[in-house]
Image 1 (tube, rainbow, N blue to C red):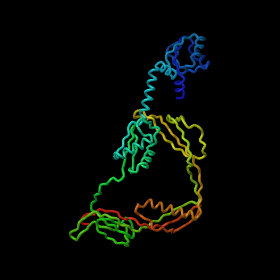
Image 2 (cartoon, helix red, strand yellow):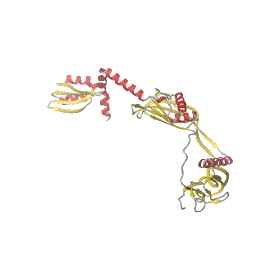
Image 3 (cartoon, one colour):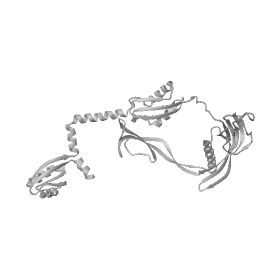
Image 4 (tube, rainbow, N blue to C red):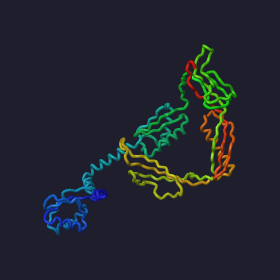
Length: 395
């Protein structure tokens, strides 16, 4: 494979020698440092072989010393392709120009679609996009990535709950979910409300159905709280029970905090480097020089160049090098305990619903060993303990 590429880049010719002493001719070529290959014998007094283009001058001297005739019958390699291309320079320039123009057009923004937004909201989105450089005729390489666009639009426009960003070819598509959109009322079949865990009942908010428990009752998981079967005996009707039943529940958590912790933080300093990559080959085009930071993190934004709808193995890469430094955080025993309490409460709050409330926390067990503190904490929580089960007539 290596010889194949050497033959291609250096250029080679195929020759035929005829006459007496063809074998001596080949031996003389080897003594003169002329590399030959694919030696064949097409006739009684003839030999054919391939040789490098650069050795033509050497072989002419060998021809003069021997009683042989030399004839060129073929040529191949990069030098001949370049010469042929120069002869057809007009076609070559046109082809290169066409490729460059089509590639640029394929990597521009030609359309922006906003779906799911009211006209006034769509206008505000278009204006924000112009500030970010997202408009028709702009090269995609110089536009922020989709996640950054999404984050900026959600922060800048209060009327939207969520916006999805997608780049399809040369078209940016934005799917918008606006705030305060009325949701269609849910339709429920007859059902009961039951407890999803054991608890002490603290508050009942029943919108529909008949309560089966009262405040301060202790209930087990699966116990009936509100029935959807209402009315006098023999005249019962079945409704979808609705409401919230708040009960006091209990959780346990074990939290571990080290007295000494090492972690990396960003200083805010950064450098940017720009590359054009061809497969595994990266060619720097801006941001030269060595990285001066001792500790750093690297973010890579890679944008592949497109030709029509095809993604070429050529990409523009923007590498952001952010300086970081190692921080050693040390806690005293009391500080570690307080940090463990904070972590435990925050972790539990993330697991609970928004209407739940932690009313009490108590450290059940505390220990310190191997450079860390371990707490076992019990939490008393007021939360909605309702889950639903279908109600079938006759239940």
